[in-house]
Length: 317
Image (cartoon, rainbow, N blue to C red; front, top):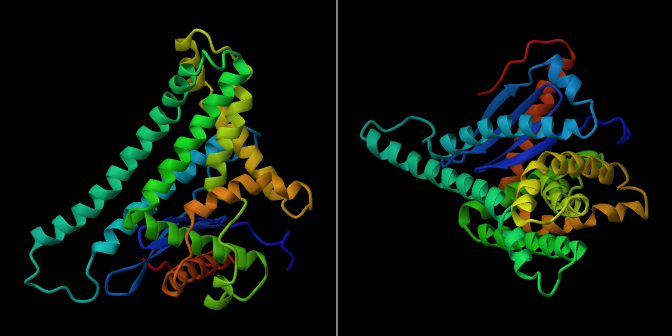
């Protein structure tokens, strides 16, 4: 089977696990503290109206982002719960308060990261670069210069943020599972047997990664902002907020384009900036992390095959 004929799969790293999604299902595998692997499955619902929207260029990117965020949050919630649960027979003397407190600590950590990510996206990426660029107005007064400075500040903030969060133990392991997810997809797309050794030998960088998408929003935004006024300052801020859907839609199309041309000698370099950013957002996984990723992917393939054959899917949960 050639790469063109292969179905397209995507994924997402979660707490101590990996989620993979196909045409009909999304599956997460998580390794619990007792080393057992548990699964979570969500069948994809067919919604004609949504499917029609996903065929419209520029709009389909926003729809896909909303869908993936909603589904991904469910899998992330499952992973945080399962990681803190005890496997096998639970000891009766284990106090409920202790278990709930332990679970709450992980939930709190994920919640804090979520809140910080939201604030970072809304404030740091929208407002702070604008104001920092405005401070350089005496040196760089022109519109093009101002947009370039704004984009530069945005890129610097992005890199600093990713580097800092990658230093925390929780996010560092998530980034390792992110690398495992990419390696499994790369191994599958190359046609190699899905073994730990083959997966580890595969690339942890991939053209369709969400990290590349984030970087493309910075680059695409730079060109889009050239078309709108930067004065007065309040209008500049409003324009940035209103143009968020436009930038997201165009960035999604750029991401898809770079993936389609990745095998063309010259055009393949268009996706390199996103791949460079993935050097920060993915880390080399251990063999046991790859095993979890493979478990998730194999379960997805099993469910996808049963659905294609018209069989009822027996789900491991």
